[in-house]
Image (cartoon, rainbow, N blue to C red; front, side, top):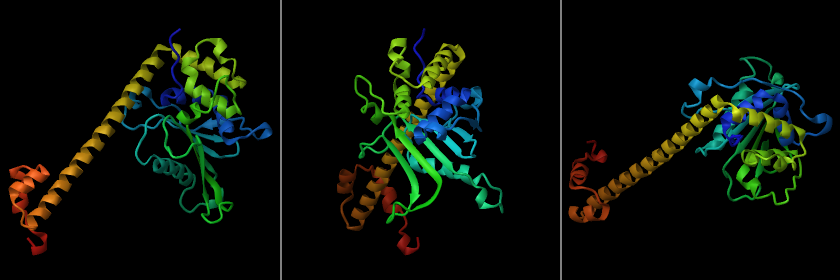
Length: 294
């Protein structure tokens, strides 16, 4: 059998957990720490898998999962493998959109249901903190026990940090730890004996589903296309940042050169200090002075 696909790829993650909503319900319950009768038994997926041929190679497409439980709570679940600038703001934006889209204009606010964001990050967002999981709510800064509302909760879980928590032999503290280890290592654990440390029967079921997905040629092709698309996204973002830094340095050079010109320094000296060309210096000298209304 070929190597298993990684569940950390957002496309694989979404297919896996939307194809079997019992797996999704167990994952959500594990993140929220719900046990016994409080566990979520059933969820309904509101945004099934997008059309792969048309969507997975689009720039910055988000393959999140929007699910509701029987109490009407909205859950936004996402596997995020690429780092994006302003990611926390994007996370908040999507959660707020799920919240506000529940009501038409003029409807009763009492009908709004809680929104819970659960995002698994395959990178470190908060390097200055040793914890691998974070839970954000609307609290008063002086009285943290005072919560404005329970309707907005955001869970961010950093998978690389979790990987450093588990030792050998493996010791899982709870069901969430089992799921996180599954995300980090499922694609490596091909032998049945390597899976015996999982006590949660639903993770064994997830392995079976992952094997089926991995054996499907079409799914493997889509997964490869998705990985290539995400690599291109990362390259384009990195290139845009480099270009922005370079343009910023050029503008800074011109500002310094203009200041030196105003102080009467020789053009040759300014060119040597800033690296600007004679043509760029000519444009600076001929540039109208905004202070003179030119």
